[in-house]
Length: 200
Image (cartoon, rainbow, N blue to C red; front, side):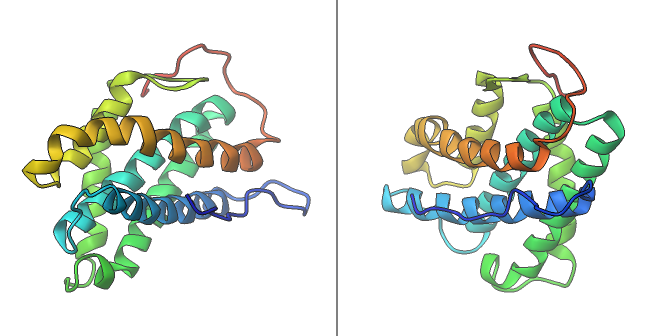
């Protein structure tokens, strides 16, 4: 996998805004989503241009946002975590909207952004059923992500995609996310000492 260079540390003093932190994570999520599609195509999975491509990108970025939110839960106080996650959802939706030509070819203004926010809200409830601890997501959290990506693939690819996602895509994505958030949240005081973080 080619290296993704994302700014994760700031040299100036002072706390960065939730929007600034969210923007860094959003750009990372976008780049990793595109890299994941490229990698899966090389592995002979058909992620077709158009709706399958769009759905893949949306679900990939939402998975990254859900993971980032759980890490924020462990690192930030409640108010700052909520600000960060809201800003992240908004910025991801803007990225999807800004790239709608590449993703869908043709879309009404605002259509992609609305779709992303609706999907984000629905997936939030689904991911809330699973745990995410200091060592990362539980099996169900990862399995849900794989199931979401599976929906957009042709029948021939559906049998094998779960293994590809859980064994390759998830570890690579979370490694990059953990590194980035360690830089962004590194100076933040941990809010809770909990072995496992639920979706609350």
